[in-house]
Length: 305
Image (cartoon, rainbow, N blue to C red):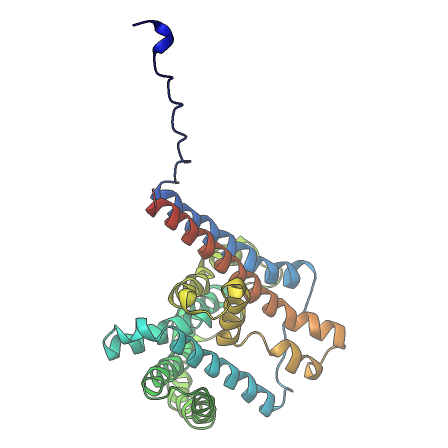
């Protein structure tokens, strides 16, 4: 046989690009979570410490506007529960209540961060932790009520009505009762309370624990995002939806529009005062959503390898 009759050599098959290893997806969460924590709180720190934006004083804000903000937060909690209903239904009832309570309290920085930071700046640790208990109990009661009521309410209009009723019960009955009950305890240990030992601008003694404890709402935002991500109605608007949901549950979206005019400041300063917290939660939630989006994409690529 001559060499001319030999069959042509087939070209080598083109290989698909290698999928990223699974462990790289976890690095996405770690790096994204760190960025969300540092940049989210960083907005507030820069505005407060370096731009001299004042802390908002809500003493003159009408009670009806505060109630509307509370109602928005409770309604957002019901929306979260409804969106993550399949995950909550897979849990025993008490566990579902605890999960809702923990996530909501963490978003509000009420579970750990509030007491720790108050203790840091005052060094009155016992009084700080006891002072945080009424708000923690309030989150526990409200979160449990969302789960219990949410299991029996499906239609949107009844969900709105339920959120309005729960808000009224919390604002006019539960919260005053908690303040009254813990008031006697706080009065008994009032000798343990004292003024802040650190003043503005804060140094590393306050800044380090401030950034470390801000991981609390960041972690909660990740769990909220993970539980509702696949249930969001408009996939292309997931980042926006997460920012609105997290911000509303925290109660940090509406004050910019509702409270600014009643702060004892010129309107531009009042808007900036409220905006520092609105921007804080929006930056945190957007970075969390973008991180989760990237994480999910890497997991899909790794799984299809």
